[in-house]
Image (spheres, helix red, strand yellow):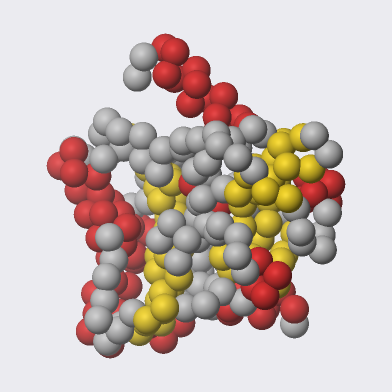
Length: 229
């Protein structure tokens, strides 16, 4: 990356809404987040998790904004659990560089002793000794399954920063104030969020002569419901 481009990317990351501190679903066994390169109006940290393994083979799969849910067959679950167990035994210490490229992966294993693995770069270019991790990340990042069906979030985690995005902007109409969102992320009921961009796509908002970038991270229903219990 050229120095000017690197500086611009760093500035964009510094100005983007901070990673939403959304809780993991209470039954989560493994969670993968894939952070694509940031660009104006696109905040990778606000996208839903790419893959979540829950109890009994249930899975949640996320894209830029959408959520899907499904269930693995017992043999499929057994194979995945074996791969996760092997990774847990050989989990690398610190961040791993798989190869060139700006993609970032965060894989958290939550069953038993928590393990977190962070990897950078393209899994396709990983060295031979990194292949088990690289293949697992690539498979989960591109996960597809016949059982997947759309999953409607029951809430969103809203985050805001003062930032001017390209193009126009819209008035703020939600009950929670922008001042509250600037202080900390707030959970927004799905009904209130309707009509706004969601996930990694930021909304450009104008209020009292200032401009803000606001993101709404979809919360899977199990996570949102647990927060209210």
